[in-house]
Amino acid sequence: MCGELRTGDVGRTTTLAGWVSRRRDHGGLVFVDLRDPTGLMQLVINPERAPAATELAKEIRNEFVLQVTGEVVARAPETVNPNMATGGVELQVAELEIVSRSTPLPFQLDEEGVDESLRLRYRWLDLRTERMQRNLRLGATVVSAIRRSMEEQGFIDVWTPGLTLGTPEGARDFLVPVRLQPGTFFALAQSPQLFKQALMVGGFDRYYQIATCWRDEDLRADRQFEFRQLDLELAFPIREDVLEVLERVVVASFEALDREPPRRPFPRISYADAMLRYGSDKPDLRFGLEIQDATEVTRGSDFGVFAGAPAVRFLVVPQALSRGDLAKLETFAKEWGAKGLAYLICGPDGDVRSPIVKFLSEAELGAFAAPPDSTVLLAADELPGVERVLGALRLHLGRELGLVDETREVFHWILNFPLFQPDDETGLWTFVHHPFTGALEGHEELIEDDPAKALSQHYDLIWNGWELGSGSIRIHRSDVQQRVFSAMGMTADEANAKFGWFLEALQMGAPPHGGFALGVDRFVALLAGEPNIREVTAFPKVSSGSDPLTGAPSAIPSAVLGELGIRLLEESR
Ligand code: ASP
Image 1 (cartoon, rainbow, N blue to C red):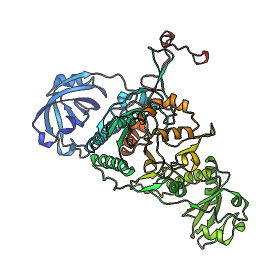
Image 2 (cartoon, helix red, strand yellow):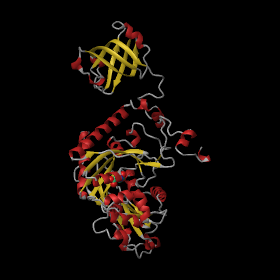
Image 3 (spheres, helix red, strand yellow):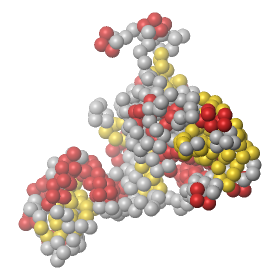
Image 4 (cartoon, helix red, strand yellow):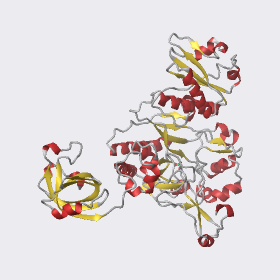
């Protein structure tokens, strides 16, 4: 292969095939950098030795496919290229064949900053770049390490259907019309959730799959309509068993890439603690800047905003910020829903400057404990708003002030999420993870008595502030499952219509079970150091939801729709 030849191969006659990366004419001699998946090799075509090849070489353009045969020779010392793996040798071409030609290229492969839509429109060219070659190969290495680790841990790969009934993972379903039963639709599986639980009831105690999932959601840097999950489920687990499986998978993936793996066990933080200290359920722990609570101490404050606010919390920034900085931070905080941003600037001598300082008691100032050369930023509002604003500010300042230690890889778990959250649209309770998540031990009674306080056995895996995946110990009793449905405002009839088959399965000897799903594409993107999953996806869609390569989605002729029992509304034609 092109990238494999070394000075030890000098004297060998060999045949190479690949793409033309570059051609240079040096008054008679023609040099070509030939590229295949292993790397580059310099070809020399000499008019005296190979007149026919030299003639043909005039036609060569970038990205033509060539096949050449010749002798590996050592380069003259002054032409050795130490930056190239094959830089000590070149191939003295005897025979040359142009196997395939290329039309003029829409962009050069080594061009910087090519527009992404152009890259995706001509993805077959883009895939030849070093970046895409590296990323897809890295992805394959990771997937194979994941499979190996799962199989070593006793899991078996079982395939589950994509065409199914709606699965409640909190997104819209993609619907597929059914020709054999016009007017009916399959939903594309948002995850194999109920199938994997049914496998547990079916006596397979360790299931996994690299499963494709489909979710009709707005596309973002880390979101595509379809994506892969390492989906897994175990029978008779305690939570720690599931976490251990995943930690082993993460370590195996790092090792497969020859990277130092994170140390196990990964730290575990409760959801309540994460929200209090970091204002986020996926905190980046590569820096401190922890949020602190001042609700109690500001109860009787002379500063009215604090006195009446349900929650007052603050950050101590290790820098005396300027008024200009503070104005910018206030705008930022308002974008995240804050009404304002109170602050105290602590000068080098510990002198405090702030429009609100005159309203604050010694006890309040003491509670902020701001050291010299620091700034206290305070948010006062309903608790969720305070968490959101300070969480966003913490992350923003962590990056802006260079507090994030980029050399660290921090994996951690968030545990004990709430079971329910209010659904703003319906005013009812809805699930935080999905409705099959079990309550924390001792919290079962709260499902009906006080849903707001019920905690769950749901856990998330976080890497440097990115959520890699979620899982839970499930409900394995039909009566408990029905109580959860009913706490969410579902009648028994509605629950039966949607999940009747599953409730029945839980009544026929369901073992306790639990599992997890890890977003493979997100994991690979982070391992590859890429800012979004499109860079590790061979053929991704863009944010409008279309595929620039094929032009999908497309309109369908009405005759075809008719066969499916579908007629379009006037406005969508
Ligand atoms: N089905 C869940 C998801 O896709 C994962 C799990 O609970 O195992 O997020």
